[in-house]
Length: 443
Image (cartoon, rainbow, N blue to C red; front, side, top):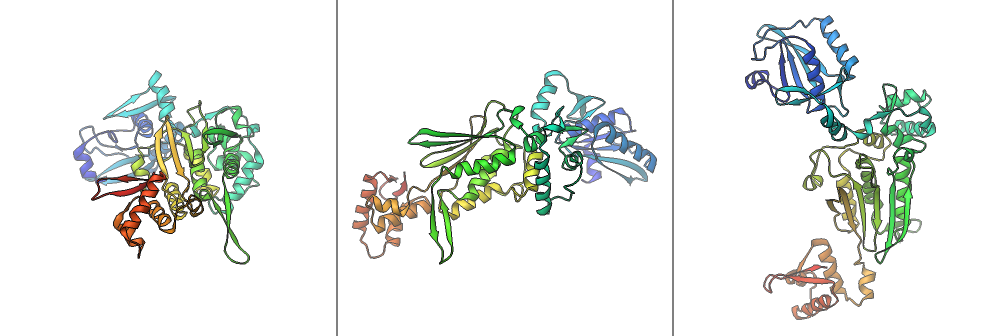
């Protein structure tokens, strides 16, 4: 950011000038951390006059240590010269966790640093912080030590962590940011707890199977989140159909109702991104005859929208610690890429793109099954041209008569129209638009 422009624009939500390093500076560091981040300049008056600041090693070290000791954060502190005078610059990032100064929490409103009290502070903890980073007086005995060491070995083998799995358990948890000031985080309990549901009864995954609209099975997958991801995937697979395609003398491919890559992405997304503040409902996967529905509590996070979701976008998660552990374990390849990978794998399998919705105070992913297989279409009496028409509508969304003539060489328009009428009578397709510009779509 150009310093001339900063001086000209003056103080604001993310900029503050201070003549000296008083208590208000540390309060503002807390406020910037709890709001949108910001920059403090010491040695400048409120009006933007350059007064200068002692940037020698000792005072800068005292300031750095005080911020670390009082708030536990590491802002970037630097000095520069302007108009022949030294200025101290403190760059503060927005924090994932609430940051207090001397036991009080602050926020930034315009050019003012103000304290938070009562209901406002309560709402801040609920909405402005990350559930997985909050700590409690959990005992270290709650942690499954072998699960932690397995994770460490896996993360090291993936090249995503440098650690010694033989180190002390507390040191390992400290290394991966799950132990803060001697206290375990919520993330530590749900990721590596012996019995996470002891504290978080709804932190589980339900896999429900329906037949003709009636529930025929309801599997509740408990345990830590890694176990939930593994066992819920198996429960889903047990509720799907699979066939085998021979790819040579010695190999065969499994072909599922839905590609397992898409299932895995949707499942892990629902576990990692759910709003664990919402205690009244679990992550749910409902498997129907023609679709599978993934639902997790909590709407889209961090300004994300349905429209932005399918585009290239930066990673944004309400549970950064949980997301980071799944990444280190190799269960998430690139932060922010899961949705696009899901869409790609469904498309490669010849299935429609998933449908994303914000509903029921949560987020849903719908995957539609390919009910229009060649075997099914032949079983209801469709001929080769009709099957081609249905396949074209699956791939392109609609079919016009000129499209049908192009993909059916040697067949008259009159015959093709008769084929379309038969598809309409069988209630497989609908006609859209007037006769001149009419097109046909799958029901």
